[in-house]
Picture 1 (cartoon, rainbow, N blue to C red):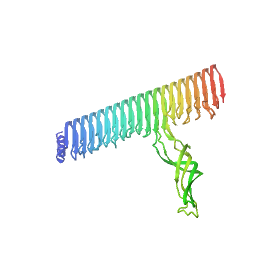
Picture 2 (picture 1 turned 60 degrees about the vertical axis):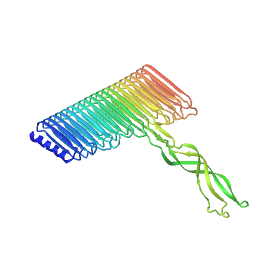
Picture 3 (picture 1 turned 180 degrees about the vertical axis):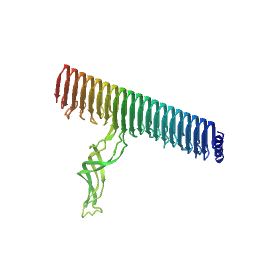
Length: 585
């Protein structure tokens, strides 16, 4: 013990002598503890305290410049290991280990110009816990707390800009694992795991002016959580209570996108939830794919020999030629998703995409355009040619294939599952010329219920409620990007083995409403409703459908296709073995 302490003091003394401003402090109490400190370049500070037996600590510091490297290591127990590597200055790290055979590795590469330092704090209490931290370019802050046995945490932070990354990981129990990766700044992350064998992975790529927020809370055993965020403007939360639950959230946004938000709550055993969200747009740009067609007024001049002067003459002529214009910027919409699962083996998949686009077809826009200046037969010889072309103008329509902006719609989805082995799939996307939204609610109470929802282009509202066993519902709703039609669908099923299908398609010229309600109470009911509005000479066609079945073995089919009039259908069946079919054109 005395020899090891003397060696540590000599190393510290050597580093102090080699470069002014280096400070090293080492205290050891116990037996067979090992401490090594190496400092170069000045302005390095380190302290190591070891209380126990067989602990090891290595600290290496260099190139601190004006902003220092600072490191502190405290080990209490037996056979704990700590490594701290700091270079470039503007680094701070603290490691506390209490227990047996914990290990911690901290690597920091600082940047003098960073507003805030690389800041790392690691605390481990128990046995066989492990922590790895890597920080680069400053403006990074991380905290890791592990209490128990065989927990593992890895944190990587890379900040190339002036924005800040923050990470907090807390694990209480045994065999929990947490992985965190942050790049680009403006990323905030929190992970709390309490139990055994939980796993949480978070990846964040930030952008200037936009923030990624992620929070994962796990209580129980062998829960798994995955969260990936890119581009900023993303907010994600996962709460898991129970055993073997799985949650995966992926969010992507760019500079012209809006925001993504997702909340997943799982209570029970073996529930699975996946949420994927994207909001994107693109800036304006100079487009060269336009075309103009119309009547050109060509200005010609002829020479008067008697008066020795030029005289203008307007000559109309058909003209078709290229036209350059500025394609407008397009923007993504807001995606919001909430998933609640209570029970066993429930599955939910929510996919929401809001990506702006421009019209692919032609846009007729009235324009007056100067089509250029030219000279015919110049130098002009009045004996050979008595006219010359001076300039021309055309009044007509410009075809601009990307001239109209269609922004991504807002998507809102909520899924509630209470029971066993329920399945829900929600797909929402599309664009619209107006600021509209897709709204969906799926509520399942029972066992092995299935629900599929697909909504496009906004102005869609849908609710599916299933009570009982093995109910199935499919809802498909679609609008045109310039439609004023509102689709509204509600499906309520209570009983066993009910099936419902609703399909609504709105025409771009329709400013009316498709409305559908299906309610089934009993056993083995089946209802199918399809509504569409074709091209009609008058605006405002309206389809309304309602089907109510109470009993056993009922069957109802309703099909409506509106041309110029309003279709309305109501089917109500009470009893057993009823069959109804309705078709209206």
